[in-house]
Image (tube, rainbow over all chains, first blue to last red; front, side, top):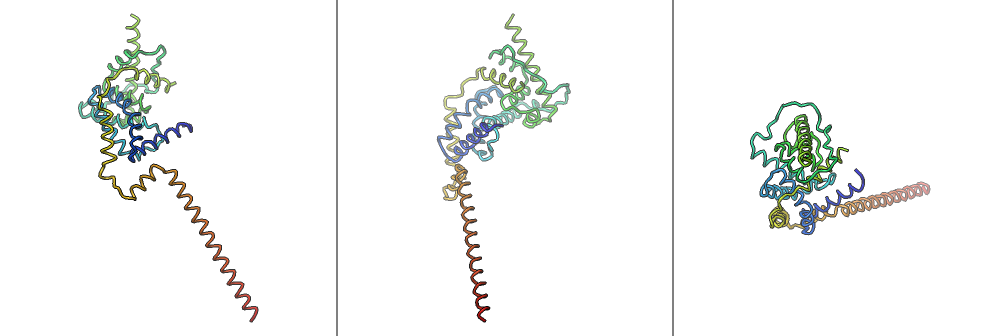
Length: 190
Length: 102
């Protein structure tokens, strides 16, 4: 991590602490900075506007409570996305029993070996279609990887799975996404 | 390459539209902040808590003041020890003088 990022993270840490200490301008800045991207992430995970708003609202309450725990080693976005993702996961787990059960199906290959390779670029419609084709579990895993840059082990920790299962989940999610995007390209050409 | 792959995917994802949040969404977040931070019963109005809040928000200044206090106490300690040594030297000299006069 270079000095620029360390400085940036420290500024975010100071801003968050000011907000949590009662500075209204700092709180406005933090809310303005995080609310919409976090809402987008929650909406993509939950697929429902009201649930997404509730998750973000609860995430902010947790953020104010845990402002002292933010060490400034990562971006504030990443820290907040982790809170939002965990809340969405909890909501999905309670709503869809069995969706997050452990699975032992084994496939060879590591998720890190799969490159999505967006050579020709992708359209918004294409990516939406491809994301919709993923299962809830696959979508959660790929969103956590994309938004938070989590490794398979970290995704596994968040989703209550072991590292191998999470790696297989990400592996299959990326393969499916890749094949759906290719399918979309072919459809567009035809 | 892999991080580039992730970034391109993220950028594409950001292009997909999500419905706008409710009009009062941000306002609700501000109200929660006020309730949590400003009117929370845990937040006392004691002088000590204000000092702690100040220390949290101005930690660099607090570190600087603590350093200054440590340096000042070290210098003061050295000065005290130095004067004690001088006193001992005076006593030695007096006792030598008194011995020599005997």
